Length: 118
Image 1 (cartoon, rainbow, N blue to C red):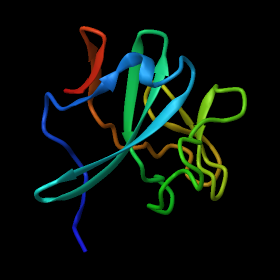
Image 2 (image 1 turned 90 degrees about the vertical axis):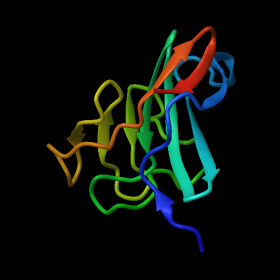
Image 3 (image 1 turned 60 degrees about the vertical axis):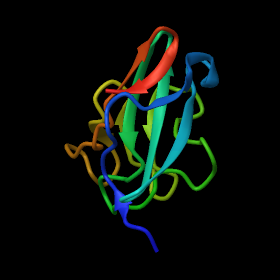
């Protein structure tokens, strides 16, 4: 079994911005020599926010369904297991059992229409 990584190198191209519909999120699993990285990216217009796919409460993956990271209205990131709510902009928990905790950021950005790691 490979190790679960918590960061990626910079300048890894994840795909075009249009890969993620505006207001939605997408899961990314990167297989690297040192192990496997699990993260997700939320798109807000031309801006992207990336996080490790680990709840700040129990260190479980946030979603129990592929790409289902957001509340139905798209306003917050939500843990599928126990309902913790996180702000999209900074990953801060604002509701549920871990208020005050934060998701771990995955630095990503848009460069020339492509989502890349920073």
